[in-house]
Length: 420
Image (cartoon, rainbow, N blue to C red; front, side):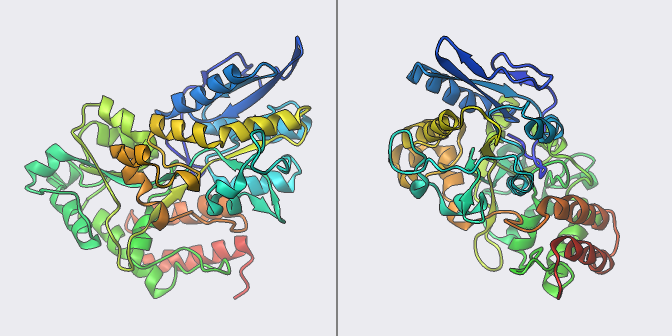
């Protein structure tokens, strides 16, 4: 699942079951069975994992049938707000790959508070779901979504290209990462880039580079720290490597970065577990390693997508029953084994079978070090789209880091309501 923050892109909507592309919902009752519709944007290599959950749920009982409609995230983001407001949308949806978008649906009273929690078989066991994920979807002490998934970003690298450059292993430190990115860049990028580094229409990669280098985007009060010495320094080193050393092309979308790596035109990329099947299918001699350790210790980006219930669904109890099944221990273990995602549940953190998996183990080993991007920040989606993304685009095209961070700090502070 390649994310967009507005995070993941797909190009073609894929129907996993009958559901109208017009947005009409086939929810209802037939022969005593309730039909629930779900919209998701999981169009990537992880899609079969979600489809299997739905298939298994439908086979597990006779009173509820779930129909999942998979379309690109941007299509869902265009259709869902008005569909849910008018009661014409699905019973449940993953509204976006941006977890912060739930705040907007809470404001418009479009999502149902989840109340059927507990340890029962038909209840959502929030006590065993990672606390940071529950916190992310809780507003005014009410839970409005469950995590549809949880992923950390790891370092994908091309073993063949590493060997050709005389590099034996993946970088483990910030200094090695930067040095390898330069060494692996051939012909100023005309033959090969050291790093496929997307900066728009994808899950964010640049915050990892900043965190590794001792910087950040906002402080605990929501005020920009991009313009501070630490913020500027964490951006300047990497932007100089892009501008002067050509370690990565400028302006890549997530899909373009993936294509570059899949084609063997870039030696490294930071990405989530959803990318592994596609890279393997492309014939890449693939290695997956933890993100190199930064100046203050290990850090990476954690990513989750919300799964919420429409406030206008006619079947709130059945919808919550599906979420209870979706987040249950056995189901989440099966999902992790199928997709490579770390489990969303804390009671699976030490599961021997999951830890023995070579892909899951890498991503799961970084869960404790992962940070969410702009969690619970006021207007986080706008901060990303109108502040951070334009900033990265400007400084990677040679604009002054000092000048641009000062200007973007004002934009961010206006959006977050920062008063300092």
